[in-house]
Length: 261
Image (cartoon, rainbow, N blue to C red; front, top):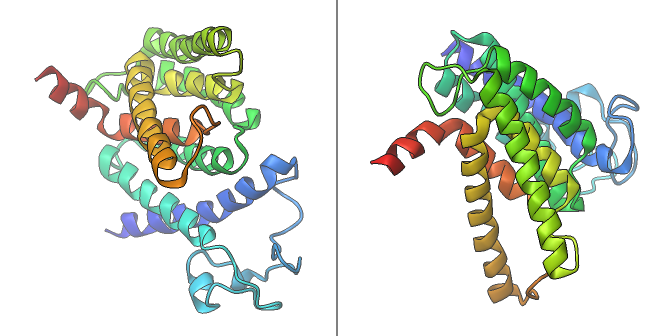
């Protein structure tokens, strides 16, 4: 129980840092300097006003200096990342510390991708390019196969997964542009799926793509029906792929067993 509390607190602290990444990376700003500041008045935030979750509640969601409302997304990201760390711990256990560490970093990357692509319709190369290299290295050496209980992912599955993820989405981009006469798939999505494939294997690519497409279709049609969005309007795909990748990681084996009957 104590370890679960520790992992939750760690996840919330890292979630606070993820907020910095989400805000600064699309602007090309350093994520290390300067220290956190109020987005309204620019006043540096004191350490006692920067305690994840708690400070937001104590200050009523407002800046101590200018009293401006602070977005509820900040504690949301902190809580989301903390909760995901607990779920990862519950799913994979404390007996595989390296697997636990890699998957926690992976889900944090998905959180950052989710919100940056949602806001700016970009997926930073600074996440996906090194992420793909590390995914193939770690997937080839120490990571389990999320779709095979007790089995390792291995070199072959990791490399095929990375090639399948990046290659299939690149093919979709080329064919879609030829048919629609406009970009049908962003380069960020292609690189992201190469990273996902390296970490989850080719079966993870298939399930992530299916779930991402399903979620994107449901949300897209809902926006058209409820808010009058136009058909063919640009919708960021990264958030739905991130959700699909997370489900593939946590429930991939169960979904596969259910599908096979």
